[in-house]
Amino acid sequence: MTIYSPVKALSLTLLLACACAATHNSTATKAYNDDDLQSLKQEVMKNPFANRKQFTVDFSVYASKDWHYPFPGAKVISSFGDGRHHAGTDLKTTAGARDTLYAAFAGVVTLSESRSGYGNLVLIRHANGLETAYGHNRKNLVQQGQWVVAGQPIAIVGRTGRASTEHLHFEVRVDGQAFDSSKIFDHSTHQLRKGKLTFTKRSNGHVKIH
Image (cartoon, rainbow, N blue to C red; front, side, top):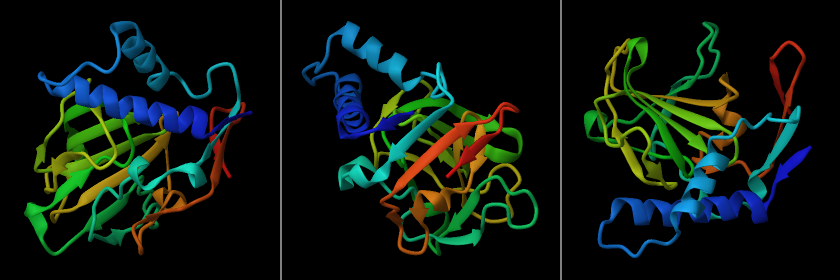
């Protein structure tokens, strides 16, 4: 079993932060050479279940700079599941279309485009093996392949796709499987839950989360 500890998970987060600064500011001093950046990209994009059936993310070691609530000030208007196989958590504020959405953790943008019912969608793959999705955006602020850090603006909230009001459809996924984001975030306080989550891949391909 692999546990993402401060040495591994948080060092990757710090590397991502430096890589982002170096990549998106042409006047910045490059923090890492091409070989270092290539190794980092390979680590972030790696299948978390490669050569193993289980891994653990220890959120208790995450400092405030290592995470960010994706939609500050928002309230849940539709929970995960919610009696209709809802794959995410819908979040909304009273400010509507003026709201900015933020990356929950550092990572690489794997998709930024319009996708059917999701409307304008941003997907981010993180160094801890998870992926987050941000849907129904009025405007995406990031591009595929771009490095982002926790708390970086990535989109403006909207109602594109199948949406009846301006809101964020927020998903957390592991190996392509969506799970309840309230296992990671307390949506009432907008805080990160300081505990461990273990992900076990069963023989049928389903991932057990405990």
